[in-house]
Image 1 (tube, protein in one colour):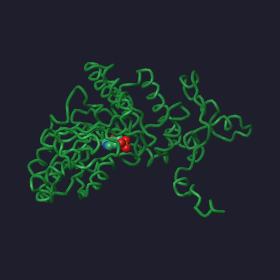
Image 2 (cartoon, rainbow, N blue to C red):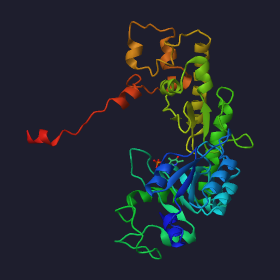
Image 3 (cartoon, rainbow, N blue to C red):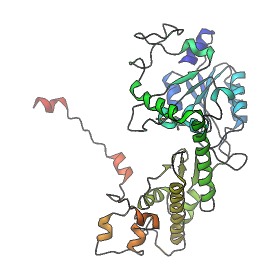
Image 4 (cartoon, rainbow, N blue to C red):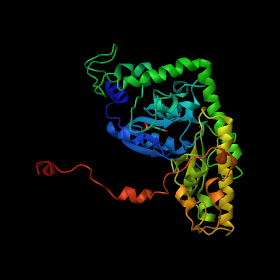
Length: 381
Ligand SMILES: *Cc1c(COP(=O)(O)O)cnc(C)c1O
C-alpha cells in the first residue's frame, strides 16, 4: 500500500503490475492481489535462480505499468542469488519498487540488509527469524521497514496517529500496534543474543544447512546450489528420481521419519516431490547428526525395496509410522522384524517417541468436508 500511495503521489497511480518469481511463497501473489495489483510471474533457471533474461523482458514489456517486484532473498529455493542486485536495478530502471520478502532473514541478520542490495520495503516475519511461535494461524506480527522515500506513505491509524505519516493513509489493522503483546518475545530474544550473538546465529544456520547438504548428498540429490556449490540456510533434497526408481515417495519418507523420532521437514514446498530441510541455528550437532543418520538409514531401506528384497506394498516405509498396536499384533505378517520397525537406530532405542496412530489419509480428509455449524433452524427447534 505504501508503494501504491507513493506512486500515486508521483502521478503514477496507474502502475499496477507486480512481478513475482516462480520460486515465491504463495503469500506474495496473495498480498499483491489484495492491493489490486496484477501478478506477472518471472521464471527461474535450472539452478533455482531468478531468470534474469526473463525478468528483464517482463520488466521492459510492462515498463509503463510496472509497480513492484516481490522477491525473496535468499530465495525459497535455498540459494543466495548472486544476481539479486541486478534484479533490483532492472526493476528500478523500469519504474518499479522492490519489496523484499523478509522470511529468510535467518540467513541475513548481522551479515547483510535488504536495503543494501536494493530493497525499498521489507517485512520481518517474527515467527521465522525472531522467535515468536509459528503456526496455528497466529498470532502474527510482521513489522515492515521502508526506505525514507516511502515513509510518509505507510499506513497510519486514526486512534494513534503516527508522526510524519499522511493522516489519510488508512490502517491495515484494527488494533493500532497489531498483536503487540507478542513483541516482547522478539525484543527479549534480540536483547539476549546481542549483535554478536545474532550474527553467530545467522552463520550457524547457514553452516548447519550446508553440513546437512554435505552429509546427505551421497544419498539424495541436492536440488539447488549456488555458484560455489553451497546452499543458503536451507536445502532441498529431490525425492523424484528415487520415487521413479523405487516407488517410494516423499510422503513415505516423511512418515518413516516418525519411527525414527522426527517430525518431517517441509514436504513438497516449494517444489513438489521434494523435502526442504531448514535446521536453523537451534539444533545441536548431536541432533543434526541424529537426523542425518536417520535419513541415510532410510535411504538404505529404500535400496532394499529397489532391489526387490521387500515388496513395494509391504515394507517399513509404506507401513510407517508403526504404532505399539502394530508391534504387539501376534499375527505379524511383514518381511522385516519388529525391531527394525520401531527401533531402527541406537538413538531411537535410547529415546523412543511412539506415534499414536498409523498413517492418516490426508487426501480423504481434504475431500470430506464437514460443516460444524448447525443451521439457525436447528437452534429454533
Ligand atoms: C513463511 C513465509 C512467508 C509468510 O508466511 P506465513 O504464513 O506468515 O508464515 C512468506 N514468504 C516466505 C518466503 C516464507 O517462507
